[in-house]
Each structure stands twice: as C-alpha cells, then as structure tokens.
Length: 172
Image 1 (cartoon, one colour):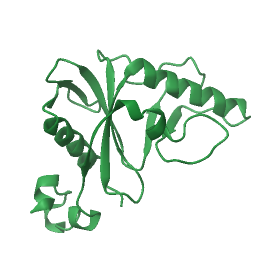
Image 2: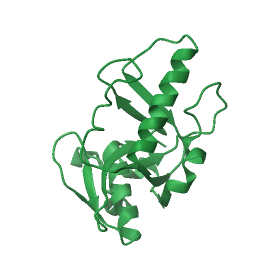
Image 3: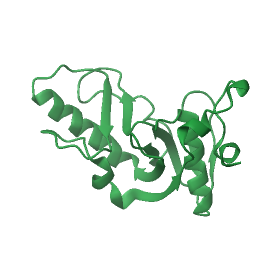
Image 4: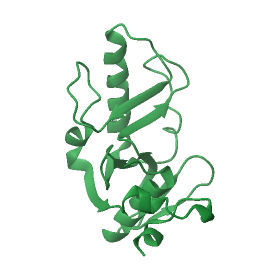
C-alpha cells in the first residue's frame, strides 16, 4: 500500500490527538510546522514510502539542511512502510535527526558514491554497509504511537472528489 502525503499527515494528527497531545499547524506553505499541546514545536515530515528525505543547500556534509533552521526542537516523523497499512509517529529531537542525516551522507560518500543534495534515511529493515537503514529500530525510543489506515484502494475510491479521502471519510 502507498498513501499520499496528506493521508500520512492526517494520520500523524490523529495519532497525536489519540495521545491527548494534539498538534496544531503553525505555518503555511511547504513546511508543516506544528505545536503540540505541551508547547513542543516540531517540523512534521512524512515518509509515505518508508523514507524520510531532506534537501540540502549543497552536497557537502556541512551544508545547511533546508527547513532545519525553523524555530523547532523536534521532528514529528509520520512513517508508513511499503506494503503496510500502519503509520507510526516518531517525535525525535531535531539534533538527533540532523546528526543521522549527516552521518548517513558521510558514510554514503565514503563509499565513493556521488554526492548529492537529497539525503535519505530509511525506516525499512534492510542490511546495508552504511548507516541510514532500519531507522525504525534505531529510533524506536522516539516512537509515540501508530494508527492503522484503511486499505489504499478505499482511500482513493472516490474519483469524483478529485482528491484523496480523509481517514475519517475512508472509514465510513
């Protein structure tokens, strides 16, 4: 199953609501900055196919990561692994996420691979010869909750709406 970004975002908001820590969006535009009930500020990032991605301003390991200069202390990552119908939310300190992206990029480049400005961390359990895979295990301590989504064919069933159904609409 693959879900669209909005469905994964909606799942993150549902998870936080279930935990009695509702998230409110505090920004407009491309970045999804949210504030939790307890005042924690986070950048909501989605990984609809199990991969959390960022862009950098340059390929070098010390480059600025786009969006990481926002006034937030955490990343709220909403992750759905390929073939699964579960979304898991992780509330991870920003510095931990930034460090992981930089370590992954450094180890990727050390293998003689091409440098780039798109960096990725994968939540799937795959054996690789560099850091950046199986982040679900690495960051298990930051998992705050999960939600089961309806089958993807139900989420996209209403073609007349010209949009994906919300989780609540799909459950009807």
